[in-house]
Figure 1 (tube, helix red, strand yellow):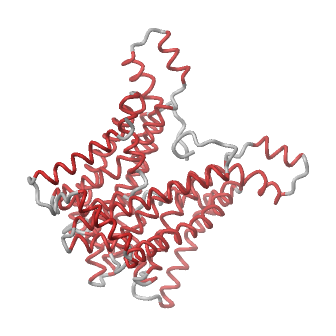
Figure 2: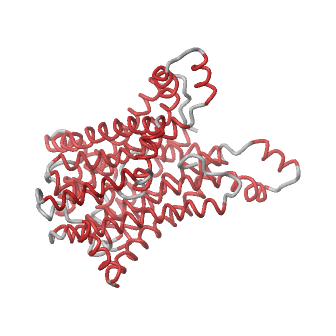
Figure 3: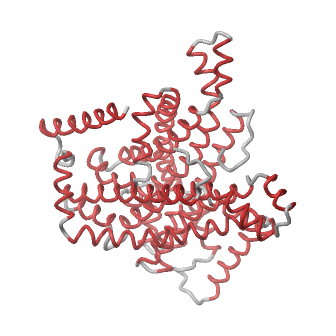
Length: 246
Length: 248
C-alpha cells in the first residue's frame, strides 16, 4: 500500500513537472520551482517575520477560544440553570459565519492585533463549546452512579468522571477549532493587516509575485499540518485510555 | 428563561447605544439597524445580493456533496481507495484551503467561479470524512444478512450501505453548510463587487455601521435558515434515527 501511495504521489508530481515543461500559465509554478523558492525564502528574514506575526494572532485566539469554549461547555452541560440561560444563545448563533463580525470588531477594538485575536477566539469557541456540552451529556450514567455510590462528592464526580469522559469530544472540537483558527487568521490578514502570511499572499498577488504566493501557501500548509499533528499528539498522550479515530 | 441571555445582551446594546458614551458609528441603535433591515428587504437590488451569495454557497456545496458522498462511500467500501485517499484528506484537513484563493482567482477568474471552486474544496473535506466514517462502520451483520438473502452488489450498496451511511452524510452536511457560508462571505469581503460579504465591507467603508449590522443580521439569518433546512431534510429522510447530539 505504501509503495502504491508513494508511486501515485510521485506520478502526480512528475506529471505536474512535465506539464510545466510543456508550458503552463505563469501563475502555476512547477513543483521543483516551488521548492526552490521556498528554500530560498527560508534563508530570508521576511518569511519568519510573517509567520511570527500570524502565530501571535492565531495562537492566543485559539487558546482563548478553546479555553472559554471548554469551560462554558462543561458548565452548560452540568448546570441546568446556566444551560437554559446560555445555550440557546450559542446554538442560535452557531451557524452564523463569525468572520462577518470582523468589521465591527475592528471598530470596537482597533485595527491592530486585538480585533483579530478576538475574532479568532470567537470562531474557535463554538466547536469546542458544542463538543464539550454534548460530551458531558453523553457521560454514561452508570459511571456517575457508581461514583456516587462510592461516596464521591459532586466536585469529585465532575473532576474524575465527567471531565475525563467528555475529554475525547473536547479534543475533537479542538481539532476543528484549530483548522478554523487558521482560516479566520488568514481571512483577517487578507482583509486588513500589515504583516502575516495572509498579508504576504495578498501583496504577492497584487504585485504578481507568484513565487511569494506559493511560499506563503506552503508555509501556511505546513503550519496547519503541524498544528493538527500537535493536537492529535496531545490527545494521544493525555487520553491514553481513548482510542483515537483515524 | 430561554431567551434571558439574548434579551439582556440586546438591552445592554441599546443602552450602550443611547448612553452617548460611544459614537453612534461604534454602537448604532437597534432602531436604526431595524430600519436598515426593513430597507434591505424592500429593495430588489439588495435581494439580488442575497441571491448572488446564496447561489455561490449552494453551488459549491452541491458539487461538494455529489463528489464527497461518492468518494466517501468508495473509500469506506474499498481498502485500496481508502489507502490512497485517506492520507491525502486527513493530511491536508487542517490546511486552510482559503490560501489557495489568490491562485484560484488567476485560474478561474475573479467572478463567481473562483468562489464556487473554493466553497467546493472547503466543503468537500467534512463531507468526505464523515461519509467515509459512516460507510466504513456499516454493521457487518446487515451486509452478511443481505448477501445471504441473495442481494447483488448494487442492491447491497443501494439498500444497505447508503441508508446506513446517510446519518453520517447529514452530519457532514451540517458541518459543511456553515463552512460554505464562511467561505462565500470571506471571499466576497476580500475580492468582489457583489454579494453580501461585499455589502458588509462597502457599508463599513462608507461608515454606515447600522447598514453593515443589518447585512450581518441577514447573513446570520441565512446561515441559521440553511442549517435548519438541513436538519429538516435529515429528519424527513432519516426517520428511523433521531438526532440526539448536535450532529449525529
